[in-house]
Image (cartoon, rainbow, N blue to C red; front, side, top):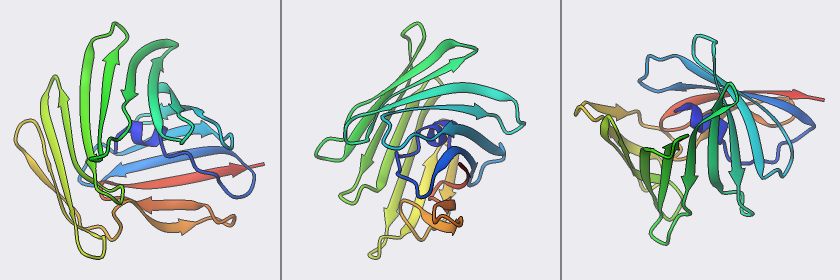
Length: 199
């Protein structure tokens, strides 16, 4: 799970009176360590700001995310020491479940294009990433009960990484805090830990 996944977690109305959220993620099959993002919580907000830190604890970048009236992500921008670094625009999913996200640099150069396909249940079944390093591809298949039966990531150099079988196509909540908000959940791609500070 890239830092983007942390910064742009779906808008969620939390229980209790949360003030600040810390998200940490560890990719399955990755040796890069834990990514961490901090964000302030504002119920129903269509804008979100966060700070992301590298696995070694050093500051990576500041991020803003914007959502439409349906709480779908439409724009993400990252900044390093106040200067815009990248901007990603998200097109809405079409009837076939396809979505395209294009990331450009501060000078307007296209850096990355990601095309994702979801099934009728909103589960990712295919994702292709086009960048300067080449093309990476992900596929995921589900059994009759909706569990992830198998998944495969193919890197630009041809390396294949098999995803672990996961008992929930979107996420599986493992633990919750005293307010009832989840504090650990697992996806087909990563384990996410969440700490919530309350007023």
